[in-house]
Amino acid sequence: MTLAPPIELEEPRSTREQVLDAAERLFAERGFAGVSMRDIVAETALKNQASLYHHFRNKRALYEAVLARGVEAIMALVPERGSGTRSDVNRNVDRTLDYLSQHPHLARLIQRAALDDSRYMRRALGSILRPLYSQSRRALAGQEEAWAQDELPHLAAGLYLLIFGYFANAELIGSIVGADALSPEAVERQRRFLKAAVARLLGVRPNGE
Image (cartoon, rainbow, N blue to C red; front, top):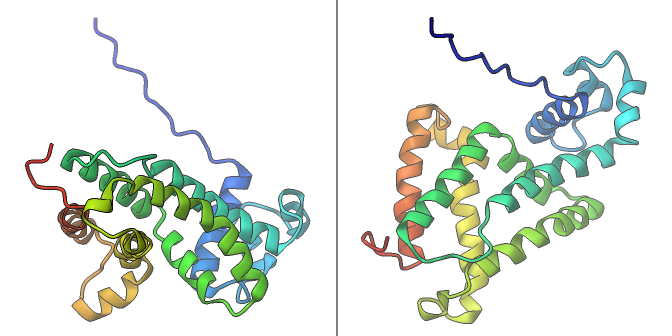
């Protein structure tokens, strides 16, 4: 008799991860000032605010942890150096879109933080995003033939806005086109567009496998 393969059960997320998930969504929806620690506790299995302070000393520390978690995950997806092949472009787009689809609040969270009037918030966001920008610039090494050296920062910024901007403004896009911009079908259309757009921006030909 053939035994059925064992069922793999998904490991329960730690309390800390659950707090970060709830905080990511709330901060993305309301901004830093619009969310209290009590709001975050209400979205988790924690019994009270004291339990939350066991994991994060204050709201700023929690906010920075939420941003850092998202940015570090994206950094892990950015190649150290682009190979210039279409298959690599497609693979990198797939990995990034898969992550953003699983964390649809991240792009909006970063956008909200960038618009925050707080000097502290801008400074914190800059220190968290700067390593991602540096790694993205390294990944664009070799693009000097298609783009001038002083254009590369604009290319990096443009690629960021092209990919992250869709998720950050999904609600606006949805209201304009009259459909859910984050539905599986809409994300797949955006995926196909991004693969073509990024390849063209990087000067990769369709047969450049």
